[in-house]
Length: 569
Image (cartoon, rainbow, N blue to C red; front, side, top):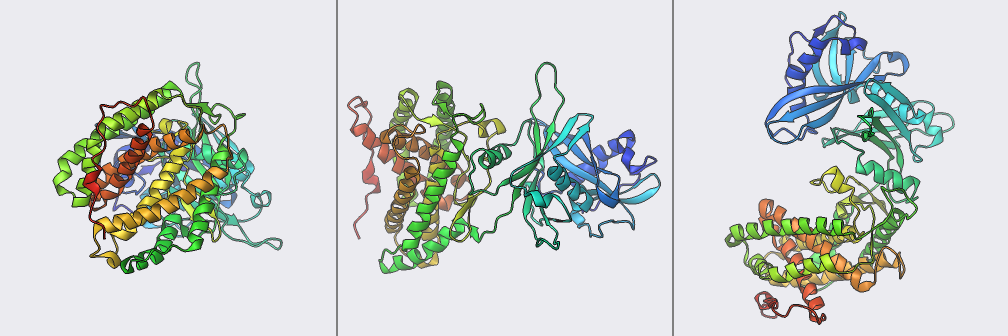
């Protein structure tokens, strides 16, 4: 709890009539919520200058069972000195003293303030820590409830992942003790004579809200209910705020929460790949190259699951949100603006930080900067080149950390998209090769991070480590790509011919590696060589394409690859 004492948070109104007490609402906005919200892990505006907190909407949630009464869902707007106002969701419950119906202890971080309503003293708490509120959410989803509100209605959608039998009887529930940008609740059927009990469903309550449906809910519900893709936590339901229409146009729905089937897992694939790399790592000092056969089996399986995910997202008969689209001029210009903006900022960062880089990173950076004309010509080729491939909705932030290992298979998670992108940008359709590029870059990071940052390889020349890591990476990359493309067969409407696949993959690999470079320069300069090597690999492939193109501009100089040559060991 924030060490907060709020004198005067007292209302003559009973708790169910909170909205009628404008004085208490004003006190919440000015004295109570600002310090409480600033102490919450999910609040993203701590470092910004805050001008004003305002309770923009108060939704009412009837509470089930013996508790009676109601809880509230507040939509709190936070206005800043710079930038747009952000909206956050805060469930609000009042627990009278000596009357906790659930008997549960409220953790300090869940207590907002002491309060009194209608002569009854108690505590104002974040509703997720109040069991009747959690049960109201679950029962709403199970019963597909619709709750009319002053500002539209709250609609509970039930998904196919919520088993029929789990909508009845007692429900186990708790708050997961994790601090993140959203809140996590767990539900499960209570034990009865005909079924065992246990935690079965995971609900994510979105704290920061966006002015439209959350892309994660769009993706998970589509993959479960239309794509029938089994390798994600199945969609069990969602809570959506349907706002009243504003003028002639319908206002977009706002997603407040989503529930999915829980999955058992051992670890994510980043950790699993790190384990696989240990055997490889221990052999390097002895100048041995060792990769276990089961590593290739798991990489091949992940390539297959990745392809199956994209195949499930390819539905020509789907509505506008998911139907495939061609490579339009508008999309190409969007991608070109993004890549050119990234490139310009990364060139400047490298110039400013060049002398701080390690010798290997300096050589890679020099090749990258000398290849500027070649990269510009490649981008121009993307603008003009005829493309037969299609674009679909994709994962958008696909890497090894988003894949859970379940023993002999994988579960893919977290479909919110790239964190730094707007919600509208996360819903843009891309070639699925953008996801593929993300996974390929993740494998490259895995081997380089392991080899360049382990005690076992201390004292080994960086150039030798780079060659060894390249050998491992290329084997893994090719295994993943072969398994991925085998899922689709040839030809498939998602892709043109093989040269078009290679060309588009280079576009997305370049975008991803250039994006990574900015982060490493700013926060992990010792890792700068990883994205730089990825960029140089792309540049080498671009040069190969140019060498076979009779129309290529002869005035563009070849790469100064001599900078990367070292003595043979």
